[in-house]
Image 1 (cartoon, rainbow, N blue to C red):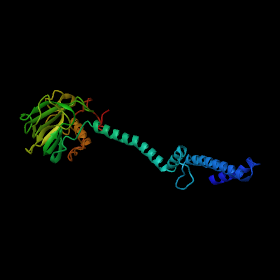
Image 2 (cartoon, rainbow, N blue to C red; image 1 turned 180 degrees about the vertical axis):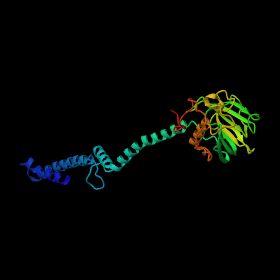
Image 3 (cartoon, one colour; image 1 turned 180 degrees about the horizontal axis):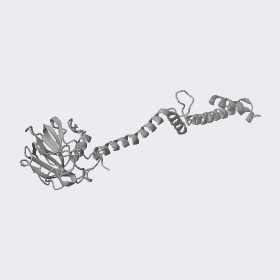
Image 4 (cartoon, rainbow, N blue to C red; image 1 turned 120 degrees about the horizontal axis):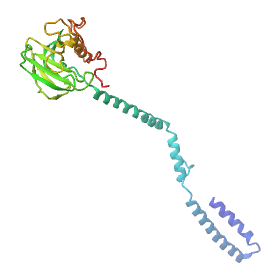
Length: 283
C-alpha cells in the first residue's frame, strides 16, 4: 500500500507543477518528489506501526475489544462447565440436608438396649418383670437418676437391688428396677445416661430380673393394689411385666420364649405407655 501511495504522489507532482521544463525544472521537480515521498512514506509507516497486530492466523486483531470477544467465545464454547457448576450448586443443599437429618437422628435417640453388652444373654420367663441369664455390663435404659444401689438386699436372690427414675422419653418419671445377680457400679443420686454402666451381671444361679418399680423405689410395681397386688408367688406374667417386656423388645432385647404372648394377670396402671412404637425418638 505504501508503494502505491508514493507512486501516485510522484506521478501527480508534474501535473501540479505544469509549465516547469528543462534541467532546472527537472531538478526542482526531483527535489519536491523526493521530499514528498519521504513525507508520505514516513506517515504511512507511522500509521502502520500503530495498527493492531494480527493473530497467528493473520486475520483477527488482538485489541482489547477482540480479547473480550475471544474470552466470551471461549466461555460460550464450554456449556458443560456451566452445567457442571450448576449441578454442583444444586447438590450442595441436598447434601447439607442429609447431613442435618443424620445429625438430628443421632441426637434424638432417647432409650437404648440396656443388655446390649451382656455375653450369653438368655431370655427367660416374665413375672413381675423380665428375667434373663448371662454375664456382663448392664446399662441404664435412658437418662435417669439413681434412687437405689444395693448389693446385699435380703428380698432378692443374689442381693442386687438397683433402681433409677427416667428423666426423658416416653416413660419419663417412671422407675426401673434391676435385681438379683448384679453388683451396682453407681451411687444414689447419680445422674446416668444410656451409656452409663449401672451394674455388672454375674453368673450366680439366679440370673437377673428387671422391670417397673414402685414410685418410691421400694419394690416391684406389680405388688401395688393399683397393679393387682401380685408378688413373687404369681400368677405370671403380670400386666406390668408384659408392658416392660414390650419396651425391651422395642429396643432390640430378645423376647421371652416362655410366656411373652401369654394373657397377663393384674392391671396396667394408666400412667404407663400403652405402646412403644416410637420409643427411640423424641416427640
